[in-house]
Image (cartoon, rainbow, N blue to C red; front, side, top):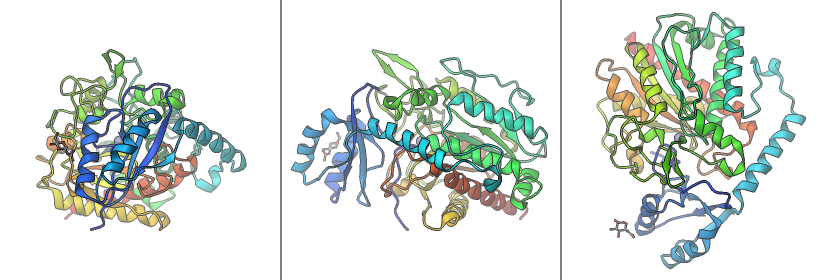
Length: 439
Ligand SMILES: *[C@@H]1O[C@H](CO)[C@@H](O)[C@H](O)[C@H]1NC(C)=O
Ligand SMILES: [Zn+2]
C-alpha cells in the first residue's frame, strides 16, 4: 500500500493564539523512530507549532511556527540529527501575495460560464455571506431542484456564537430519495473545500437534464449540504492575512484564548486520544461533548434526515486522501471492507480527473494515529447499525502533502480542478452505493 502523509486537519495539531506575529513554514524529514517520536510529542505539547502533516518516516513533516521560535528549535532538532529547512519565511506576506496573484489571474483569464457549463464563477474564494448569496441565486434559478433552508420543511434555524445562521440546502429532484449528507469547511482555513463544493453543486444543477451523471445523481439521491459548517471561524479566517490559518470556531475560553475544534467536539468517544483539553491547542475538544452550537446544528440536521441517510461525507483539505473511520481508534470497524472498497473507487475517480494528481483511500490507523470526537465516527456510530451499507468518509482535497504548494492557502486556479475531483468521486460513490443496495 502506498503510504501517504495526511494533514493534521482531521487530526491532532496545535498552535497558539492568533497574533500579529510573523510565521514561517518549516520542513523536516525524520528518518529514525526517535526523531518521529520527538516530533509527535511536540504535536501534543507545543501549541506554538501548527503541524500541517503528521510526523512519520514516509515523508516530510510541515510545521507552521512563529519565527521567534525557530532559532532555538532548529538547534534542539539538530542535536538529534534533524535538519530543519525554511520553505516560506513569511507566511502572512505569502497570503497577501497569493491574493494579488489570484486577482491578476482573474484579470487575464476572465471566467467563461459557457466553457465550464456552470451558472456561477468559480475562480474566487468567497466569504460566508457571498457563499450563501450564491446558493440563494442557484435556488432562484433551479427552484425545482434546490431547496434552501428557508423553504425546506425542517424547523432548522441554528446560529453560531457570533449569531451567524448556520445554513444548509437540499439538492435533488425526488423528495424521498436516499440522502447524501455533506458537511463542508468545518475547519475554517480549508477554503478550497467550500469552493470545490459550490462548483460541484452548481455543475450538477447546470447539467441536470443534459448530462447523464448529473441527471442520474439528482434523480436518485438528495444531497443535503452544509456549505460552511463553521461560519464564525470561516469569516475570521477571511478578515486579514494574519487570520488565514485559523481552524477552530470562535468560542472564547477566557485569558485571550479562543476556539473549539468542532471535529473533536462530537458525542462519540469524545475526550479520547487525538484531542486536547487545552483551549490553546488547535485540537481542543471543548468543555463537554457537543458543547458548541455548530456541533448541535450538524447533529440536529443529520438526525432529521438520518432515517434516509445513505452516507455522510466530511470535506476537508489538504493531502489528497479519502479517510476511513474509525478515527478515534486504530481498530478497523465492522464495515471497513465496504468503506475501503468505496474509498478506493472514489480515490481512483479523483486521480483520473487530471491523471497526474494521486489520491488514495486510507484509515487513519494505517498512519498510526487517532482523532476522537470526529463527525465521521459520530455519524457511523449513529447510522451503521440500521443501515449496513451506510458510509462515513472524509475527504482531504488538494494539494498533496508532497507538493511544493502544500498549503491550506492555494491559488484559486485550483478551485475547478478540486471541484471536478470532488464531483467525480461523488458520482462514483453514489453509483457504488446504488449498485450495492440493488444487490
Ligand atoms: C515523548 O513523550 C513521552 C511521554 O511524555 C516520553 O516518555 C518520551 O520520552 C518522549 N520521547 C522523546 C523521544 O522525547
Ligand atoms: Zn480539516
